[in-house]
Length: 171
Image (cartoon, rainbow, N blue to C red; front, side, top):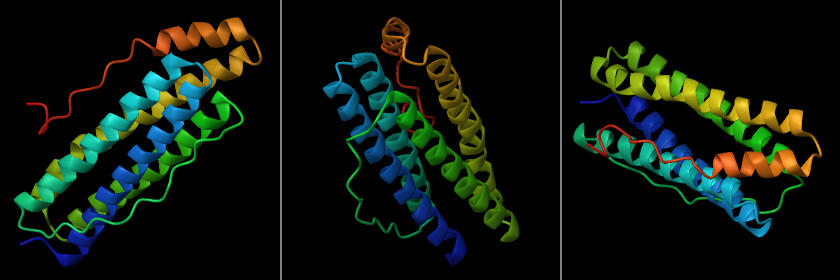
């Protein structure tokens, strides 16, 4: 049986993943209103991935006999000043997510829950990729500055993003 502290923390992470997804959906709607369909696509794919992460944790908790406790999601923002502002917010969100997953891993270690540690390893690796992806876009946006041609080039590039397969859901 899973330790109650760990079950509570996994529930918090499930809700954090769904909240992050909802925030990405709000960001996608902003980009859509700005006619930046590539940016909107990138955020839509991010929304889908975060939902999948939440579902993966939810199913894991259920598989271990835990009780899932879903919270109300706060309304996401849909008004922003710039793409750079949005990606800076996205990076902060991913860094908070990384910290929370690290905390979960530490709890699993403390309670000698090796199955949960093994399950969380994928999330630890995924967060490295998530942060780098956002950091790369921030660097490009900083380089572009106010150049609309550069922004449109990046928009076109982001339109090509496909959703990643999430092990345990897409198998």
